[in-house]
Image 1 (tube, rainbow, N blue to C red):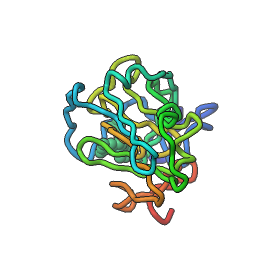
Image 2: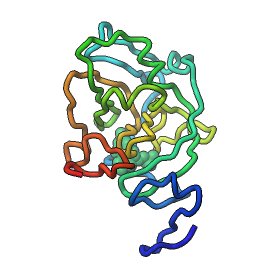
Image 3: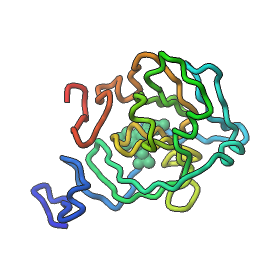
Amino acid sequence: MTRGFEGRPRATGLAANRVPPGQYLTNDFPVLSAGPTPTTNLRLWSFAIEGLVREKVTWSWAEFQKLPAEDFTVDISCVTKWTKLDMHWRGVSVDTLLEAVELEPRAGFATAYSDGGYTTNLRFPDLVNGQAFVAYQYDGAPLDPEHGGPARLVVPHLYFWKSAKWVRGLHITEKETPGFWESLGYHIRGDPWKEERYSGD
Ligand SMILES: Nc1nc2c(c(=O)[nH]1)N[C@H]1C(S)=C(S)[C@@H](COP(=O)(O)O)O[C@H]1N2
Ligand SMILES: [Mo]
């Protein structure tokens, strides 16, 4: 690492290819929440896929734990400009979750919704083919409540605001409905490699 103009460590060599434009590398895992950390009783926790599906599906915590889980090692970029490489998560691929429902032909988008009221919108091509998962472990331990435990969505190829903490379901829609940050001027999609930070970028 070398120091750039802003005095922040700048990736050099191989790691540089993994850091999107305008981002700096960090080893920290900052906490960024728009409100207080909700406490969720696991006996009352559920995850649902509903909206434009033939039949709504809901998993209890116990049922969710029985779904096939996978390990994911991914790089994460936050719109506040930090990038963290090789983050180790364990959870259930959104592909696996979608196998349980029959989408209606009009289905085009999903709104991830969370305890506490946070929402974020995603288009289907960003949710499938191993690109998104619901994580309940980070670095081999149950996900810390501040980082979204018991479970959070992780969509590593988009800015981290798309990775809804305390996620409780996906609401499938025909049209794209801006979520919490998207309604406040963040980009509708949020691709870090295109620097889609704010609407208009
Ligand atoms: N439910 C919920 N999810 C959320 C947020 C939030 O405020 N509430 N913040 C988002 C933003 S802006 C970021 S950068 C990441 C931060 O995740 P972290 O606190 O684990 O670093 O969570 C995202 N998911
Ligand atoms: Mo963020």
